[in-house]
Image (tube, rainbow, N blue to C red; front, side):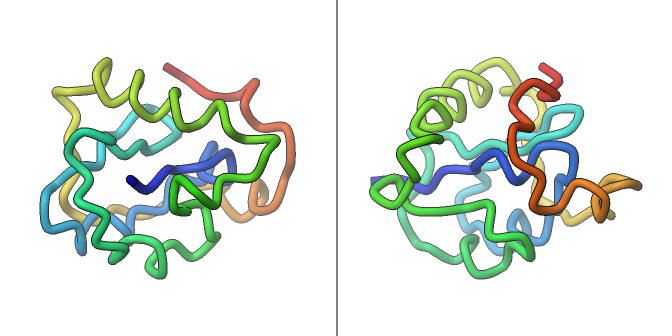
Length: 109
């Protein structure tokens, strides 16, 4: 089992979660973070750190977001040179995007 970053992270990109990850399995894109499922050790340390609850266990991914399991794996490979281990400020308009549904269309690869 692994943890998955969900749609809520798009256009917010809070990075509180990356500092607690003992295996550095977070990768950063322009407006989204992902977890590499091959590196995640299921420690669950990242989940409570996310201020917008955008990280869940693979078994708790809502039915309408199951595509994020594969998307995390795909983008972790694509963004392999963009490992992130230190917290940064969220995106400037993150507060405006918190809780907005249907953000997949805004994902920047």
